[in-house]
Image 1 (cartoon, rainbow, N blue to C red):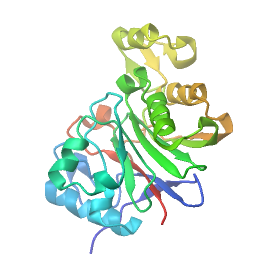
Image 2 (cartoon, one colour):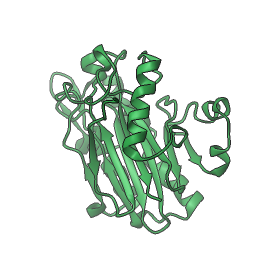
Image 3 (cartoon, rainbow, N blue to C red):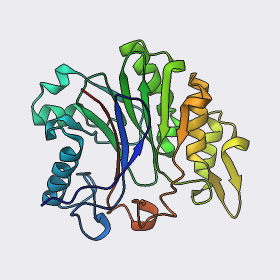
Image 4 (tube, rainbow, N blue to C red):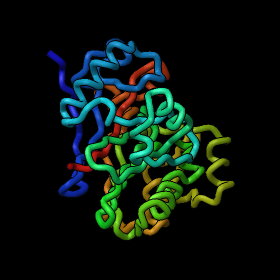
Length: 261
């Protein structure tokens, strides 16, 4: 019998299923234990297959309707539409290469991103019934990937930012995210308000969840429509994957969103 993943669910709308996975409830081993479905971090392909099967059972979908990209810390947004769903496996992999955000208005399709300290962000447009899943590491945050995603939803679906609901998922928090001067300067050079998103201790610390929250507000999302997880992956690495704690050869959190049929 498949071991079902333990998921953290988010309230984003009556017809929306939104969640982040924890480490618990799968069959992966070692630093991938237990629940990992990311194929790009060194885990067993068979364990990944079983974990995907278990997640699809939980969500009530088939495997071909569970979509995740190969992320590269950039700001490319891909649209999952009927044309994409008609592609074969190889064509899908090519279309998802180098993508850090997915959007769709298809019902019964789960889109999501993988993180292990980076910040996942989910968006739901209640007016056009469209959703988006975003991977915002520090590089993607500097590139304002959240803003790019909202712009892409506006172009594709006519999304108005004021109608969006946003959920910031589990990631590394200010106290734990110590960075070198080059990271601090990367944010400063792009015009970020460093007094709002950083703190100096022995080294600089950057508040990635807050930085993405501020980007959502700047893009026009209403403050009351933005929620954030209180999970710091670095501090809670027993329950959520943290690359800083476990190394890059470890599992990934999957943060997904699904429009109900």
